[in-house]
Image (cartoon, rainbow, N blue to C red):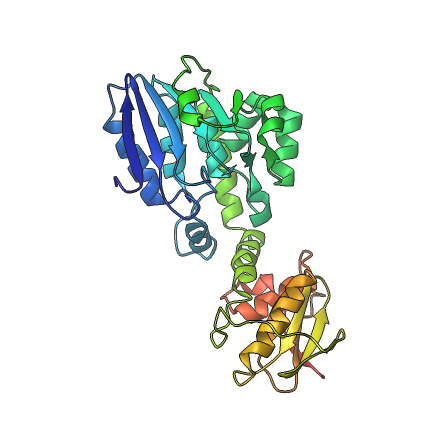
Length: 346
């Protein structure tokens, strides 16, 4: 556990540093390590939470959320609520030294503290809506008490993080500093708990559990991973250099190593027709070219046909490009999330 949360003493303060690279995702293991750190510092009158690296906490364990949406785990993450409630009601001054992005459960953790100090480069937000979810660890309860209902609704419904300067003007954080974050945190001697009613926290947990089981969440969590898999091509070495392009059109890319057929798909996805025998430099050139155009590439390993989505019978709107991503990623999505795919003529 000491690898995930280190403890440094400074007078009557205990500095708890979260360290779960690369983005300090708040996994079950990190939550348990944090709980143990609280138990091993009973004599500390002040607790200062910060994180290693350049990110405070980027969010919850998305792999765990994925397993919940797929029915492999129970539809709740109550251990997060219990931990944050115990931090807020610990009877000690809890200072959140926010050294970088505090997103999702990262912001909810920060709001469970009594004083929030952030680097000027930090950002804060609740992006759960992009996964078809609502905040589930006090975000919808604590946030309105800090910045008011209207600003809280905007932050939650947009899912867009805000800079530290804006968070300060809203009252979401108490102070901003340019450097020496921990030195500043050690000077803090007062704070303010949000004082969340237990019945409202329980209602939020129930709504969060319901969204975890929704078809929309299952689909959007799938898409989260799908878009990160698009350029992971087994037969393309990662250091393959791109070649100069001799000619390019919406449907064909030519280089000294040969030509590739391209198929723009509605949205921001372009399919690439290739095979495992396609020269790696040619494929690397196509990927680099599409990235420059702001397109997401999909490899279509079929000799004569493109993947073609048919979204007409979807119960709610998804981009056609998203459906193509779903087909290529090959997850076990629920039947209500996608419609059959057909091979379209070239």
